[in-house]
Length: 110
Image (cartoon, rainbow, N blue to C red; front, side, top):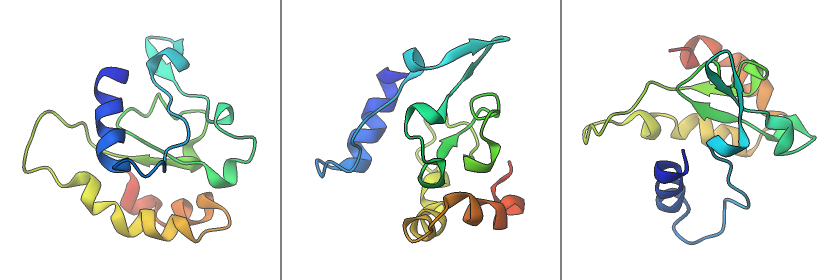
């Protein structure tokens, strides 16, 4: 949801303009009680798109583009996103993010 997603994106971006566009719940499709995210709305080239999400229903159309994470509920000791830094760094250099995510499937699945 935008109410917390924009705060997280602002914190990650730090005013650098890394995030060109932002998508929130209003950009999703409600399907069988779950919000599904259409990654093709971000780009036609899915080799450059990935999603970090705690809901498998959100990325069910694009599982090879997904980095599953555990839900976060105000735990100040949580380091889940920090643990993703090596993978995110690898994605920077990948010609197709799905090739990296496929290799790490056993690590990514929660």
